[in-house]
Length: 243
Image (cartoon, rainbow, N blue to C red; front, side, top):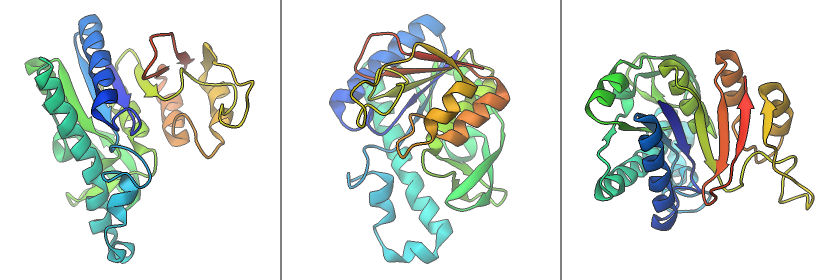
């Protein structure tokens, strides 16, 4: 099996979600079992983005547990929409969230860490349907409270779940065709890299817009999980990141 991770840009509207569905269906045909991790829809001031949810009230600044609960809703909405559209496209699936996903966290609200992943319920769900959808960016702490794991945390969710399930690799779908030699928005001569190892990737993540969250990449290095970064709109080969 594999894990596929779709970010906010991939999930932003029905047209791009159709591309997500095509990628999921292709992966199901090839690998039989696919776990899909999603980010909240859109970015910035988009209605259901994390930032928009966090700006619903100034009171969230002093109520961190409540703030995390609100922030987690972006991924829940994205998971529900993708699940319904997958079902409509003829692909049965199941959503696992909260304690069902088995992702346990610790630390501080807003910047928690994943302390453990229990994949039991994910494995059970995969015996019923080949496609399981998990909202990223969140887990459950020891008191049963929702805790988010920092900006870009859905990348970490995907890799942590992939490691727990011992998948062959984790696929990331982006608005670029793969990992670029430099930020294409700043450099006209930026080119796509076909292969690199995880140690070569880490320096490329020292930017305001990293292609993968650096914390997630370090987790992948510790767990020796191969990564595949590819474009959401492109059929061309992406970039393999080897352990």
